[in-house]
Each structure stands twice: as structure tokens, then as C-alpha cells.
Image (tube, rainbow over all chains, first blue to last red; front, side):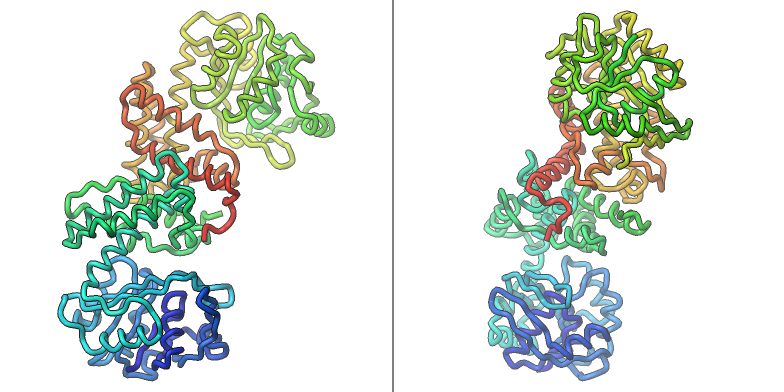
Length: 310
Length: 315
């Protein structure tokens, strides 16, 4: 089985490195500059599970090295149009695309471009960021989840990808209920990303304010109601665990979007918060907290667009 | 008439400088470093209304140079405790304290300490900052200072004289018959502006660029108006119209100074400007959901600041 990863960021890069380490046929489709570094040094991973450098095959064009059975698309939502252009030549008749993006907006876009049957569901729970020299700073969690969105038995490529992940020691893998898992992740992300942005602090900073934990719980509940209205109500156990971790006093957790904001970078405001709010409205649900979070993110984007971030 | 001004910061330095320029007897109560700088460089005002550098009288203790007819407070609300301590020796039988602070809560604090009879009302409307070099940089086209008795009493002679000095100095404002209403009018506007600039981390124009920015601005202003009305000081239609208009300018770079404080990692008047509005709303049965989020934002900022997390990456 041939697997193509678009990009080699913290999530895709870690996953690719582990699969390659386990002997799988992995190729990374990279921009020229990143390609040069990875060709020279391999994928450099610093991880609590052990540091390593892993050589991988590198291409800079989607036309090279194919056909691929699986393409893992781990880009930011705002880069999706250029990511689709990049992988388009690599998508053959039997290719399965596994997108690892936040939220749900990307599915409609990918389906329209490549056909629904080519697009599986996927998500990653890999914590980390890229270091200054492009090294993958892995922070511990390393789970992935993918599967058929229509609930049918998984196609051969996904079954094979599952076996590959198991061989590489990656937790998770094939998930018969990927849609539920995507919603479970999104409600968590909607709440933490929305609130860490709007409050400009970590979970612990937010919990230190009088109403902070209550506001976080309200945001989560707004997301939960949207998921339920969409047909994917999270279990009480899932909601309880998310609530506990997002309202933890002294909690060090923080959404990566806050890091992006503080660097003056682009943010997935629309994908993570705006689309959740839009769906709440479609279902006639009140989402006052998400409304403020999205207004905050849009204010940030307006200020960024005018060059007004200090 | 002798006036003592606590500090020679942006607002106190500006009004004190202008008063002295027009012949008023003004003394600044300052810390030793500020005294030294003032002795060396004078009090420097840079303003669209004219630049001026003057020698000024300074004292290091409230007990020096008195008795004073007027003691002007222009400190931040979170410095109230040390401000009270500093001016206490300067307050004699006939001294009127004129606080030019935002919000309302400082009046209760001063009343409790000095007795309501000593405490007049005052409102400053000016855009001014202290530069790193210690210069007073006046940036707004306006500079208005209103003073008056609270509770509608006739003004005491010292206050009348002080209001005349304000006029003589070419400043706008002067004696106000309903200074408490004026305080509320300013607070309603400022609370809306500060709450939203901080919660959204942008200028009024940036906020309006968000889809629901305008709606959020108007709702928040209405929350503040309702609290003022429930407290017996419903802003005039004219005042509200002005607030609504100045908060609705697309593309405006106008922002609350509290936002600049946040971005510098400085202390903020969160409790005084936003928290107290919420508390008064609660007491009067007025819901303030937008202010609640803004206040949470400010408290999160203060929590992060307290742990030394400002200016360091969140991740």
C-alpha cells in the first residue's frame, strides 16, 4: 500500500514518520523548501516516546510517485483550496482521501472536487507543533481515527491503513463510527478554541475568573446541542470528560488557535467556531457564547487584515 | 485658592499645567523621582492646543504646602488605597476633594474615608497619555473637565472658583449642575467601549468588521443604559445618540485606553469600569450578559498576568 501525506506538519509529519519507521511505503508531498530539509534530515521527531529522525520519500508534485492508495490530507482549513490543487494529480481511480481537518466544512468542499466516494472521514489526536527548524515537537498524545462516513463496511484501503497504524504503534485506527468521533472532537474543539481565543488564556486562566468555568461549560453545551441536532449526540460520558478537562482549575491545556493568534497568524475561526454557530442557527438553537467567540475571531481577522496587530 | 493635584500623570499633569498657565496656584504631590524630573525638565505638555513647558511646584507629602481648597485625584481606581493615604494629610476642614476617575465606586470609598461633605464630583473627557520621557501628550481635539456638587446642592465657593479657573484656562467643561448624571453618562459610554475593545481585542472599527459587531455594540450600550436608568440616571437621548454614533464608525481606530493597557501587560480598571456596572445591574435586576463575558475576559487577563503569563506564548 502506498500512502501520500500532504505536508509534514506536527500532525501529518508525526503520523508519516511513525508509519515509515514501521516500514510502510510513505511519501510526503512537500513544498520545495520543506522538501529540501526533509530530504536532507528526514522527518525529525522530538517526542516523549523517544526522539528519532526518519527518512521518507519526498515529492514536490502530485504527479510524482503515484498512484497512491491513501492520501492523508492534514492541512489547515484555510489552506484547503491550495491543498486540493496540490493533491489532485495524485488522486487516481482507487485513491482514498483521509482528511484530518478540524470541523466539518471541508467534507462538502472535498466531495464536490473529488467525489464523495473518495473521501473518508478522519481525525487525529496528535499533540504537537513544529519547532523553529521544522522539527516535529510531539507532546504526547498520538491517536488517529478514520472510517467510512456512510457507516458501510470499511474499504480495503482503510482496513490496510488500520493494520499499518497498529504496526506503527499508533492508537486508534479504523473507527466504525467516525462521524460520531468527528462530532465528539469538534464539540471539544469548538468550546476550547472559542473560549481560549475570546478569553485569551489557557483553560486554567479561564477557570481562575469568577464565571470562567461556567462560561466554558455553556460554550460546550451550545456545541453539544448542535451535535445532537445534527444527529450525533455525544454520550454523557464524553461530555462529562470534556467538561472536566476544560474547566479544570490550573489546567494548562490551551487551544492551538490561541498560539496562532498570539503569533499574528491565520486562524480557522470559520471552520471551528463560525460553522458551529451557523449550524446552531440552522437548528434554531441559541448559542450566545459561540456568537461572542466568533465575533472575537472576526475582529482579530479584521485587525490582522489591516495590519493592525502591533 | 490653592489646588493640590495628586500625581503629575497624563490627566493631572494636563489640567494642572493649563490651570497654572492661566495663573492658578497649583501644587503637585509626587514621588521623588517625578519631582526630580519635573525640577529638571519642567512640566512638558505637547498638545494640539499648544505646547508648553513650565516650572511647577511639587511636594512629596500631603502635609506640605497646604492648606488646600481643592485636592484633585486623577489616579487609577486600583491605586485608590495609596491615593487616599497620600492625600489624607492635605485634607483640612474646608478642603473639597475632586476625583476625576471613571466609574462611580470611588465616590463611596472616598465618602467612607473623608465624609461625603468633602467629596465633590468630577468628570474628565480628554485623550492624553504620559510618554516614556514624562511628557504629557494630549491627542484628542477636546479637553473637558466638569465638576459639581453631588445630590444637586448649590456649589461651594471653592468649587465655583475652581470651575472658573477651568474656564479661564481655556478648558471646556466647568461647573455642572448634575455631575452625577454626567458621571453616569461617561461611564455608560466608557464601559461599553472598554468592555468590547478588551473582549474583542480590537478598535471600535475592528469590532464593527465582525458580522455581529454592530449588534453586540448596541446591545452592550443598552445593558449599560439600563443599569444607569435603574440607578436613577438614565442618560439623555442626546448623550446616548452621541455614544451610539461614536461606537458605530466603520473603520475607526478609536479604542479604549484599557485595550492599550492589556496589550502592554499593565494593570486594568476591570472591577471599577466593568465589574461594578455588572454588580449594580445585579442589584437592580438588570441582566448584563455581554458585560459578563467582557468581565470574564478581563479577569482571565489578570489571572494570566498574575502568573507571569503575559507576553509569553500561550503554547
